[in-house]
Figure: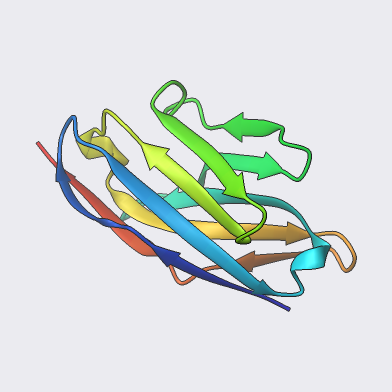
Amino acid sequence: QVQLVESGGGLVQAGGTLRLSCAASGSIFSIRVMGWYRQAPGKQRELVATMANGGSTNYGDSVKGRFTISRDNAKNTVYLQMNSLKPQDTAVYYCNAHTIVVPSDYWGQGTQVTVSS
């Protein structure tokens, strides 16, 4: 089992910045990929960014060049630096951990990000 606790969401004006954090605990040795997804009202959950243990990253097209994912392995924490925020970035952001010992996906409780125009 992996537990994920997110923090850092909030309200920001368009063009502003936020940084999300997600701390993992539990069976962290089994985690191979950590990342962020988001879900806006009435829409499906979508990829924001992921980072594998080896450092390779993957970004959703809508955030490329504006968001940066990073990991601090010593703290078992993944971050999402969000710059040049737009109203369409408004959503609940979920931290995800993918494990491979027993292939599973774990999710945090979600943190609200609201970007005002």
